[in-house]
Image 1 (cartoon, helix red, strand yellow):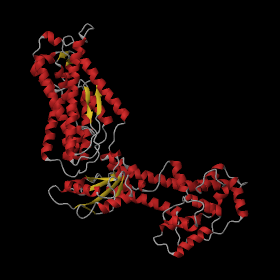
Image 2 (cartoon, rainbow, N blue to C red):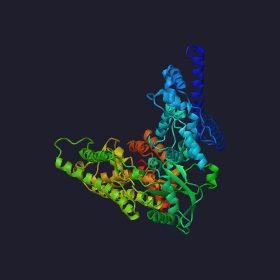
Image 3 (cartoon, rainbow, N blue to C red):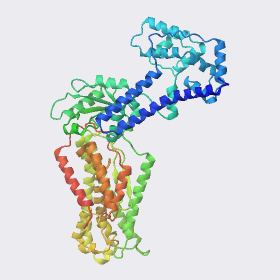
Image 4 (cartoon, rainbow, N blue to C red):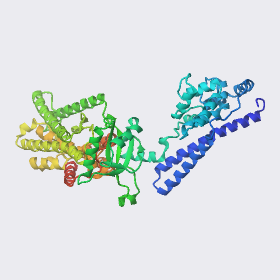
Length: 629
């Protein structure tokens, strides 16, 4: 063999074939899985699934063999045979020596003789690995396994102990007990070598098509839930939850728990009866969970199944049954910006308000240019302070309204995330929710309270400030801060109020001209715009949360895409000359891609009264954000 080039080439081709065939099948499986996830046809998916299962079966059959005996009576290898094989293999190309060692679960630095012994006794090692698969393990089978282990040479026994994670001095009986407990050796890892070389993870639930399908839909609609994968409940915790919390008085399972990225789905039937059955179920489950052995370890959400269904099924309301989603009780479910990032954005927000206030106050209301250096700095400071305080008051009231509702409905909030804006001083704040609201009604109340409170105070400031502006003389007006006409044209509601108090002639000026306004009128004008922006149905802003309560997760996801597209179009094609909507659409597209974390009860619909209030609020937002004409 060493002298015959033809034999060497033939051997190399056989090795390459041995490597290529599993890799080709793995690549086929990988491609079919991608095709399965992208397909919208139920028949095509079923066909692809059968192909994948067939390929997986062929790979298993080619690698693993099963036997009724745990002692293969492998003929011992003599010292002369061992030396001869060591000499032959040591003269092979290094890559083949490396592959040979890796195939036996060794590293390149391990002894070649040990790899040869492992290869020779591989049949015996494989049947020992099958000990864990036996439902019953009588004394005769146990003795066979002990005899099979004892016939192995000492180096092989030592390596086998190491591979299953037991110490060198572990007795044979303890080795067999470890195997029965589920310990597995890695003495034959050809598949592992192939997978690791290709960056493929093969086997386990992460390759199960149904698991991937469920997780894909969950990531799209309840994304924060899937981020809990590193903290998912253990099987013991799930069993405890089922046995101690569920029951005939709460919720009975109709199938085994289903794994999904982040936790488990529990399908079943709500056994609580009454007009408010779903909220009562959640209340009972919370009470029983608090008294169980998994209290503080897991949490649940009563939601509609996020999995996509065929259009025909959705029209007939087939498969729309609610499920319990179970995950860990870690705070990781509620993402929060890093403290340094919160500090940075808060500082940027404060700076943007200061710059805005100084900017509008430094504008000469009569000429549209910045004030000269001989302008009274005390007057500039006083008017800037009034604008700053009134703007801050609007967002303080906005945030206070959020916290009152959260306190009433008993869920936790984090510190608000500030969104700076040099156009408006402050685009707004997003208040993170740190524990789940009880239902859609609770989330709606929380989301709408802040913008409506801020809008109401802004409208009051605007009306009062415009009234004060209309009553000043020309000299006093020249001392007032100012806004460009282009900015005043960005809001139909604000623009019409300006026209009502100051006359239509204001909008006959060039877009770059400025209009002197009382500080409260300026803060009120930008306040109604920024609070209306907060009500746009994007991500987990207040408007995005309201949209989710009115249209569900799937509906709000589509509305978000439509809203961002509309904002972009209005900004690009000149409808919004101040570009307020265009910049906000960029913020929504890049920073608000996720929906809210699951609520405790997402099965009950929003109340009719709240839905009507949501519609009325939509009209108010449109009147505010549509440009003045």
